[in-house]
Image (cartoon, rainbow, N blue to C red; front, side):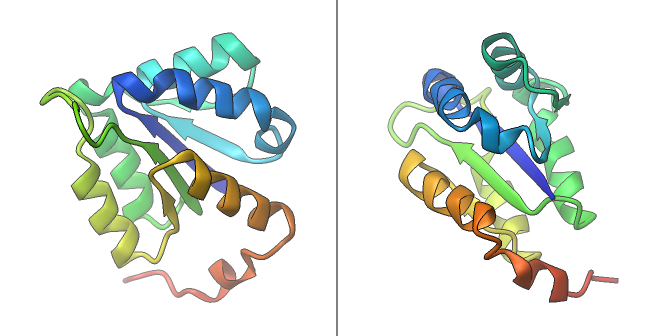
Length: 134
């Protein structure tokens, strides 16, 4: 299973703290991330992940391409709902893709924790029966 990790600038520290707290869980999965978020996660945890470009350089679109190819099982996109900057990743495009491909997405720590714990309990079996769009 693959998890995508993305965070707006003001949420990167929260993402790092979350990945530290759930490091043992995250190391069981394939991880992809936008560039700067991934770098910070790697520096803090040593987790192995595929880093795409930074958000302003198209990293969010690279994550979107993974979603569109049905290669992602969960997206954690910690967004800053109040002060997101124009250069930051586009949450709406990723949300739209997640809805199209029926990929669960968390936009805050509380939801991320619930979804991650569901994965740990094996409650993501429904992903196996979702047909890939042709």
